[in-house]
Length: 563
Image (cartoon, rainbow, N blue to C red; front, side):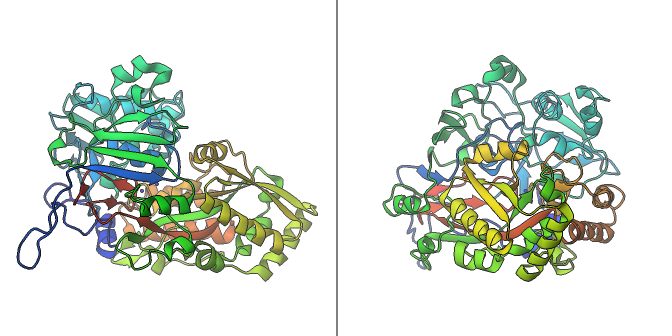
């Protein structure tokens, strides 16, 4: 799901610099000190005696193994309890985590040397060393482990990753070496324009080899089988089916002195109204993302409502393993049939915007221009054209009707959205029958990975600050494709943008925009629906809550509770 570099510590890449210049970022604008000065200079806010935060989430945690995780819920929790080389601060700047300052590069920026802090420890007291990163990265690319993000995130970027996946190189050939306990050397296939934001991603967190191997199959099955090196440690979690968990301040964290919260209690609440009621009753300080107009209207104008446009896109995936969905006209008909305007204004009614594109608005910038300014729009709602294409597609396939399994999630928001889409598709495309299966988040991910669906409501939040985080999802055989889409011309453009055009930003931009056109207008591989607006209820006494434009959704380590 995601921000080159600090003026003093790390300098954010040009892409991220442009992003930050045009986007408001995710910082809570209140003072982080826990005190606010009035116009006479007197302190009007003080820290509460109890620094305990109560949070509601709408889904369980599928995995706490940083190598095996692939979703925002897991990444956000890992971000609270663990730390990689770098992380995002409340202003979306990349700052050192375990790293001791900025990386250094060779002349062509393909070899990166990173020094590590010497006072970083695991929650069992073991030191965090360069070897912990080497172990985790090798485990992530190991075909035997089959990490869902490993090949997708590393191939074509980290030296020998592709060769390891193909069985032509050994794990120890991966482009990451521990020069000593506190020095890492990373070798890339070629320079990456988004390298610093890329290295913040949770897949690249360290893992303690001795501990992981001693736990075996039990590693990360629950809180008792985990180690932590981040701001908090998990003291209660019963595993992927657990609906509550507790994180407490990690006193072994290298920067524990600057962490004020002592405890975070998290409970799963899939009913938005129940979440709002709990918030109003003072039982929750932060709610899940809310999308119901009836609920949001109760808090409109209140300082308790936090709203922001996030760069996440939601779409229908169409599994081309299904005979009917191999037909491009049937896919186009589905993509054109949903009234997106009604979806965002009447069903969601939360500030989300209709998406006739893949790369979101307000996310990627080059020469101060949004990617969307010079890119096209595709698959706008057109019900009459949809019917014509549907009839043409049925004639081409010899089908009179099409029955598909539609996989969605089990939250109330998801159920409402899915019912609207089902109604739209069945009304506009005679002969289409959809069976909705509403499943927990973890099951939805598993169904997607196994391609066990016809249509699937999915979405994507960026993993790093570049359009490529959306575009390379769809390459032939890609680790996140999971719908058998394949177009050699699309693959060629993505390959060029990743290789020959890396040092030619304008040409690279054009290649990515051409690829987007092929994916949507020519092939209708997916049906984009909306770019989400986030609406949260946050207790005004909670200061320093940070939300992020890519990677983990939130950071809790800067939060302070005021009186």
